[in-house]
Length: 230
Ligand SMILES: C[S@@+](CC[C@H](N)C(=O)[O-])C[C@H]1O[C@@H](n2cnc3c(N)ncnc32)[C@H](O)[C@@H]1O
Image (cartoon, rainbow, N blue to C red; front, side, top):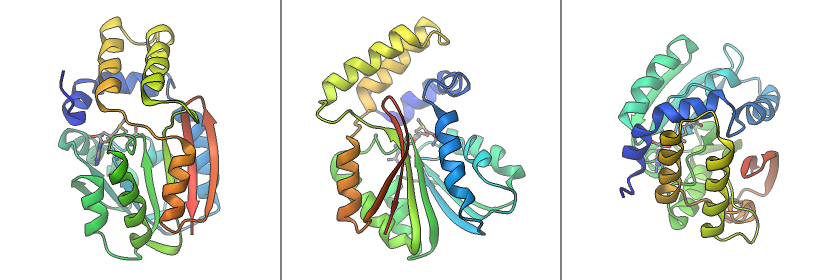
């Protein structure tokens, strides 16, 4: 079984599109909560999106003209090619880079961004890299900037194995919009590539990096959205 998130993600891309369109990972509720927060930040904003994928839903979170600069990074060139198309009508200056999120942050200018956004990607890197990601976010953000993190999070006290069992049971029994083969592909992806943390661990990583205002914006089962500010 491959443990390469990029290969698996490419293989399961079609299934992921169905997951989004059938709202199986609560993109809709989360988008509403995040868009409400963005209303208080009229812009023009500079944003970096870690693990941007095809950037198909971030374009819906902003009003025209609100974003001046969008930088998307993803390990998958396949996803970035799709992102380029989706971002065409966006109007912001777009920069897409095929890089690991940590490298992208390390190469980004200091105190430059208003928002570091990441949706359903931070559960892939190992725990040590996650602390480094939060620390690098502090460097690239302006003092009044924020991290918006959307991700799967284990329940408090729930071990990874228990999480994998419970999440995959949900996929098996409730994700009826997918074919049996797609459900198997998704479960394989989750077993091989998903290393989610609990919300309290992520909050601690954020606090260690200097983000002292940590606010949960939305929670739907294991799917959460948080805002971390200095
Ligand atoms: C589930 S998709 C999420 C895509 C999009 N952000 C969304 O919310 O729909 C996860 C994405 O993260 C990317 N990814 C995984 N690990 C990464 C890493 N270490 N650095 C950058 N991107 C990564 C994958 O290639 C994939 O496109």
